[in-house]
Amino acid sequence: MIPALTHLARLTRANYVFAREGVLGLVDPTPLPLPARAGLRLARLIERPSNDSQAGRLAAALTRLGPTYVKLGQFLATRPDVVGIAIARDLESLQDRMPPFSQAEAVLTIERAFGRPINEVYVSFGNAVAAASIAQVHRAQVKAENGLKFVAVKVLRPGIERRFRIDQDAFAYAAQKAESVSAEARRLRLVETAETLRRSMALEMDLRLEAAALSEMAENTKEDPDFRVPTIDWDRTTKEVLTLEWIDGTHLSDHAALLAKGFDLKEIARAVIQSFLRHALRDGFFHADMHPGNLFVDEEGRIVAVDFGIMGRLGPKERRFLAEILYGFITRNYRRTAEVHFEAGYVPSHHSVDDFAQAIRAIGEPIHNRAADEISMAKLLMLLFEVTGLFDMRTRPELLLLQKTMVVVEGVARSLDPKLDMWKTAEPVVREWIERHLGPVGRVEGAAEGAMEIGRFMGAVPGLLSRGAVLIEQLDAATRNGIVLAPETVADIGRAEARRSRWTAAALWAIAGLLAYIAWAVR
Image 1 (cartoon, rainbow, N blue to C red):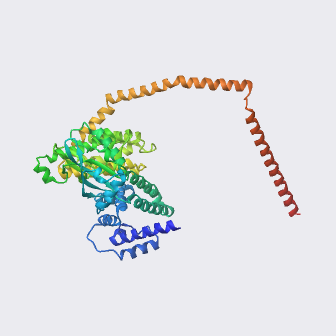
Image 2 (image 1 turned 90 degrees about the vertical axis):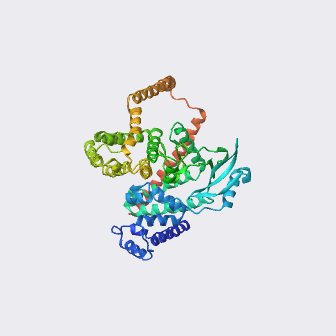
Image 3 (image 1 turned 180 degrees about the vertical axis):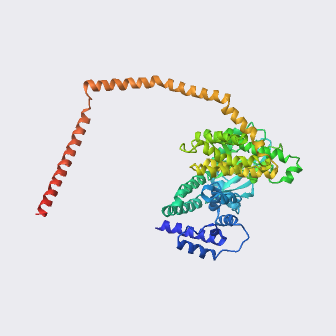
């Protein structure tokens, strides 16, 4: 009872903030019962005047409610199937900026994490230069081979895990109650959504996992000429502290500074798009938070990404899905694009491939009648997900995260080059993947992998046959001589049988007594 009251108190406060910020105006009262409609009308009475859009009001309310709600908003931006496309798009602008916690708390966290004074960990440790919902970043110095070097130190917010746990328990409570009374809530799988948010936050609050993600991407991109990531200082990294190379680059959003340094904005825009597609298709592992604040350009003109708390993964099936869909639209091969959906199992087989190809054509043809700078791959995928909903395609979280990231990446590239030809820019990366994996080389490698699987199976056959021979010999002996049991086993079986007999007798006497009582009662 007490936890329920605690959850209700927290949710009541959140509802007050939503009402005050005018968020409840987003709710359509038509399908709601009369008491709920009356409650919405009363809530609108305390709404503060504002010129913000309704979605802007939602972002303001989430920011006011604190770190957990900011993360909730960012998470919902990846779930247009839950909040709708318009709200999800506007939530993309939600900024993960929070007031910094004190320098003393940061120092205490570091000293507790390493078990020694901070001056033994860093030569110098400056004030916070950026603060987000989960952690904040400080500039520090450490000893290096040729003197001192600057590093970026990411420190987890004190008490953030407890705060997230309490708020997420409230979210789960609200989702369970909603699903218990609403078929629409069950269709949107709110309980599953709340649990997915919980798992995502648990991963983000262990900075060792972020370091591992950064390390994996460093290995994947070590040969890329126009993209790199910071190096990790593993000796100064723990669950609560992450130490990285300090990036002295230019923010991607500072166009004037980039031009002043002689960089070609069109080339940077091309590198942003191609790097993202390369990571998604070639590696199946991509940075899922590539907004301008997380992207720099170093002195050599390479893009440097930071903040690896949110990452996306695509399996072989999803990579093929993405590559063939984009290539199908590029070449206007709608039939093949439709077939990919069925081969991947995204669209149930009882639907018609031809009907689905026709639906895809309705998306593709208007795009090919427009100028290159008017074509949006992110919008194409968004429309595609709308159409697939008509063909019973279930929500695929990994594809939604891909689509969300593509929206951000495309926005960054267009800000650098408003006339960017998305298809021409994407085509070399997509074509290379298609040729590499679906062309002759890919088929040969696929056959080689198949042969290796057969070889591994054939290598295991002698062992299987040997075990099978032993089993056949044992069965043959049992058939000829009967099954031989140990004396202890025979005794245990006898005792069990005796107990069963006693219980059977007792049950029969009980039934007999019951029948006798019934016969006496009806005389």
